Image 1 (tube, each protein chain N blue to C red):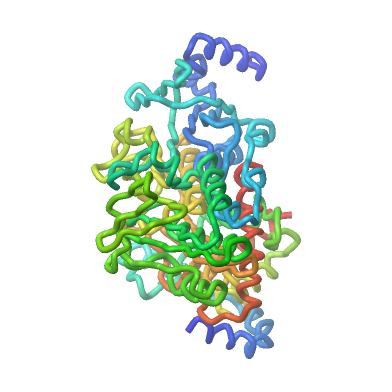
Image 2: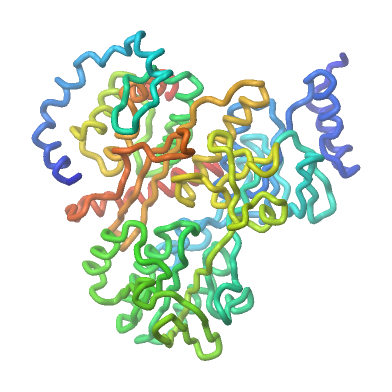
Amino acid sequence: MSKITRRDFLKIAGAASAAGVLGHAALARAAEGGKGSARVVVVGGGFGGATCTKYLRRLDPGIAVTLVEPNAKFITCPFSNLVLGGLRTMDSITHGFDALKKKHGVNVMHDTVTAIDAAGKKVTLKSGKTLSYDRLVVSPGIDFKFDTIEGYSEKAAEIMPHAWKAGPQTVLLQSKLKAMKDGGVVVIAAPANPFRCPPGPYERAGMIAHYLKEHKPKSKVLILDAKDAFSKQGLFLDGWKKVYGDMIEWVPGAKGGVVMAVDTKKMVVDTTLDKHKAAVVNLIPPQTAGKIALASGLADDKGWCPVDPRTFESKMQPGVHVIGDSSIAGALPKSAFAASSEAKMCAAAIVALFKGETPAESSLVNTCYSLIAPKYGISVAGVYKVTEKGITEVPGAGGVSPKDAPDSFRENEAKYTVGWYQSITADIWG
Amino acid sequence: MRFKNHTLTLLLGAALVGCATEPPPAPAKAAAPTAAVAPAPAAVTPPAPPPTPAAVRNMISTCYSCHGTDGRSAGSIPGLTGMNAKQAETMLKGFKSGELPATVMMRLAKGYTDAELEALANYIGTNLK
């Protein structure tokens, strides 16, 4: 009846927020006659979550979108390996939320979701506030199973960093590389599948070797792998040989690569076959969906979240969507690009569902570049559709860069690696 | 094997314009109901109906991760603006056939039907300025 202006709405929302229930008025209005805006709360401001907020607002500016992200700025895992290689600064991989707030009208709250009440359609924040939603998107990334390796723990990660969440852990690993003496061994322990960023440990090996080659050329990189095969394997092995000679050694699981225990005092890594004394250990532990996903009953017994492949709505909790590394997204890898791609499909599906429409056909893509050296890039790409088998790769498409390509091809892909980063981060946080 | 294609590209490069001006296979109306009931075997692609506008928006949005939001690139990867639909179609189909050399687009374009590439090209020519 009465015309509600934007200013009035903000006043109401503000008052409601002060009372501890943001947008309660809007919910009542929506229930009365659909006049209020639909509300989406997004948990996590990374590649999945931040993309989702921007694309929700682009697709339907009538939707009130709130992003809950603990950090004032987001530091990306992509290109954190380049920081270790000395090619990038931490600043250059850090992104703020100003554009999402000012350009796209996303309500950004720097807080942590501590509980999800899917039945009551509300979340509780660390600050004590409660947010009501019509649909919730959970994009919390990963968490670590520290206790699967004897002697390893969150505390041990201060001595043997995982650096698999970018930030202080990246800086810590970098400082250990800088402090080590020439001639030392850097051990990278890579986990079994599934884990965040399948080519990541191997790009890291190349970037660390690049740093060592320049500053500590007698040193070595030893990859102890829980697996017998890895992403872009042929391309990495060829590239390492070509650029770094014998500096990088890869030990597959079947040949003693599986790390069983670590001794942080003696800096020793124990595998099924050998003990390795290291100058620096980068231990990437096995992973699960993010903590909040586990705590909210969104994950299965293996620790990852089953979702509807079209809408990314949880199969465990209605009204809650899970995107990014936490979700089980069929053939899609746990990559930053895939998370962003999932977020776009999730946003479009939510907009359709609010209108009472059937979500349109999905189209998902993955394009991941890895840098072996500053002028040596390789990539993997794939196009994905939703079939009766879930998210499946379109046959005959995608794949890795050609083997035996000329140097100019690798150099072009190195250039596009940087272009990829510029574009995807601007598409998400810009 | 892929690389053989790449070499072929150089040989066929001159034929690109000729190829691209061939009329696209008509999306036969009769094919639509058949496609709807067919069990869609993985190996054989039946002539697919053109995607809906919402499906095209989904498809194009995935391009923005590399080519920039609304095709306005923020870095060294070419943007998608300033092309008409025909130019975009020629490029996309050239990537798909391998006649137009690229690094990653040759692999990605193969993931779309001709009807999808035409719809994407139309979107690029009409909406991305």
